Amino acid sequence: MTKQTDTDPLHPAPPADAARKVQSVKGTKGDPTKEARVKAALKANIARRKAQSRARNEGETDV
Image 1: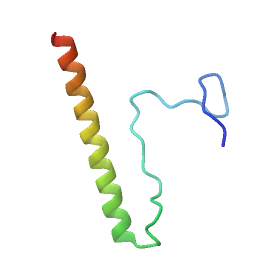
Image 2: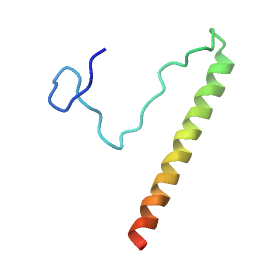
Image 3: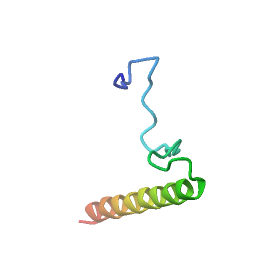
Image 4: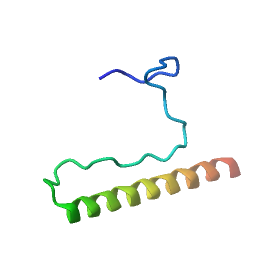
C-alpha cells in the first residue's frame, strides 16, 4: 500500500472535511443485518466525534 500525498497524482489526498463512505465492514461474514448495524454504529461514532471536535474548537475560540 502506498502513502497518499498531495503531490501524488495517482493517490490524491481527500479534502480535509470530506465525508468518508464506509465501503465494507470486516468480520460480518456475509450477514447483511450485522453489516448494516456496524455501518450505522460507525457513522454515529464518527458524527459524535466530529461534534465533540467542533465543540472543542468553538470553546478554544471563546477564550
